[in-house]
Length: 518
Image (cartoon, rainbow, N blue to C red; front, side, top):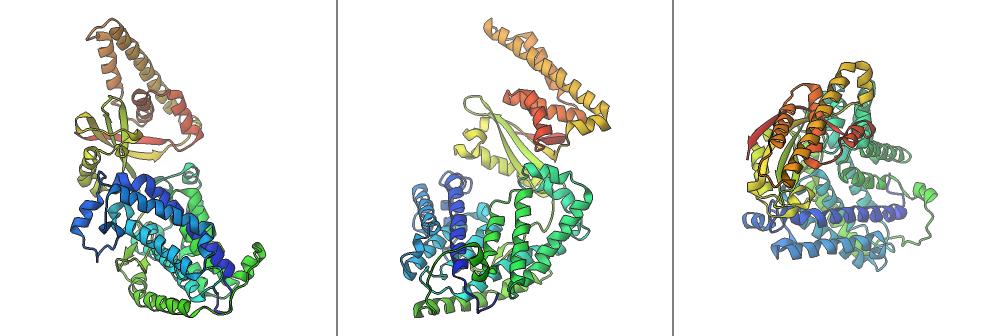
């Protein structure tokens, strides 16, 4: 990448791709922002604005923070995103283009600054920073500013190199090449391919860690090299991001990183893939030059602390040093969780229908100290979106919360070959509990038909069923989880057993222990 290169096609692709990311971000906000941060959400914006001054978190919602106003702002963001994706924002000249991208940035920055815990992830600030730079790219009839392309590559460098440095400093498993032994299982949202990757040979895990170090510590330095080295660096980064997309779900973090790779490719390369006739002025207008010059000075001045953070022993991950999120520091998976803990809330709603709410407990301190507080927040919220299935729980109907260690199960067939007794015990436990469920159902239905308040057959079957679910062996735990699903959700247990083998995404439960009764 060098100053003599043309970037008209690069800008064309980058603006439309970034518009897609904006569209995804605002569509997500339409479904989750009000339940999480609305007037009746878990962390209401109104309460946050009472304690935080405007200078610390600039946001449009200081003007008004009702649910209707927030929803209207989000839908305005969706409309502007479509305006950018279709290219109409670039068809009416430089001023209209800059206004459209500035409005997009202002609306999303307003969401991020009041989003608190739920908008504290790295991809949120990445979009805020990248969206600010996009304001100065100009319209289709303006000369592409090469300096802005360099500043976008500077964001990409900090994203990748920061993620690599935090891995070397934080968790020793990245240094001894064992992190992928746990990552596919304990990552926030495994996908169906995560099961196969988790059970792949150990040498593939170590090779994956080596490729991660290469992609994040070596490749980023070549973003600033001339072609074709910058092409190769951008291509390797895109390949690395695709592997992350296939192995797990990290929201749109990987997609926006791919978008940041686009400035690594100039018109000489993209012209071979995309044929669009265009005519561009040889020079930028005076207004555009002044705006780009001011942007460059601001970014250079604010880059000192993020650059120093990259080489600091106490490196910060996903941190902002000023409220506008103009130049930030990034990182991912500095520490890899060894065990996956899930807190499951069980209860009934107002119609006495059972529901489940599952919360991820990331480390022991949160499990021991904050699980009850988090569950109390979920229970006390009157918003229906806080309960699974769209039903709002009430405090009096909650049964209990339990802590599980969840692991990706292995298929039943390989276990039959290795441990025939194991499958025999599991099948016997499932059969006994299935018969007890049928017996209890028949006895209870008979009691209901006879209009009896108590039926001893129903009571005895219920007690035996409860006793059969108190086992602690590995085999009984698998049976417990599957038959528990049958009892609580009234689904056929055959489909649950089959899904453990076919999909590979069924979680196996080890060491169940209740935390407390609510």
